[in-house]
Length: 116
Image (cartoon, rainbow, N blue to C red; front, side):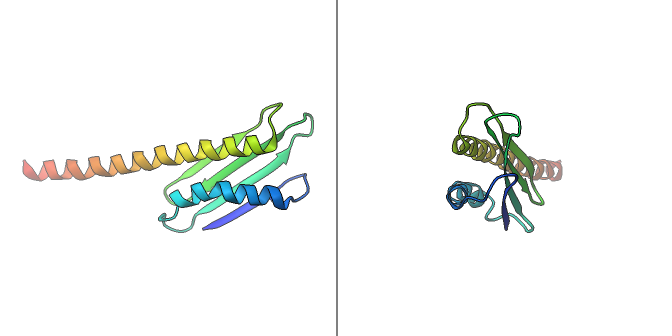
């Protein structure tokens, strides 16, 4: 699993990176048994016109290609990061449940065909 944390237009912060790594553990736990290659890209970018930051999380794997981003005025950087991680966590759970349900339906359909 490849994980990249990118700071665009802002200085690198060890505290922000440590917080991001702590939050990304939830995502990594879901993706632990995914086939390779799995890439996680977390991008921090300050707005040039406003007083807020944009946080974007990209996950690519053979089974998933998901994007979550958040940018809202008056929101602190850590709040935006937590929002993006929580949104991606929900998206991953929904996608994983859908894949499991689809796999179950395919299996049942083949069994019913054999019975006829």
